[in-house]
Length: 196
Image (tube, rainbow, N blue to C red):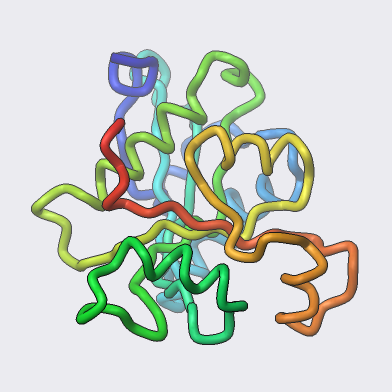
């Protein structure tokens, strides 16, 4: 088991929770502002839903939060070697130009609880959630536009995510952006999720 499953409860992040909870801080001002101010308007416009874990012994404390929305992993514009890497895991008759995915739009762990494995436990929960038979939709991949920082990229690498483009330069060229990129697009194949 883990800290989240033993000491926390899972919730949709609502106006009521935000109004009754202490300010959330994960150490990234952009994420903190999103969770505390922008997540509700984002949800109202059907752009994504934000979920959180509250501490059981003090439900005014948000331990971690994350936002999910629909996405797709597009392979039709990838270089051939990257396209083959993704398509090789899909039976030929089922191969498509894009595959259904869930985008992890935001993810943060409170500074108060950092360093005890909550981020990894949270990612394992998200992976299990989308391969569970009661999931309302099919999605083959989890996707993320990860902050292009060493710490954040290593977190996703450690949790089994792969880069959609093999290099930052290749991703910049494909997307028409200039280097250095602020984010890197990464994906996780849920079918290969034997260890969750």
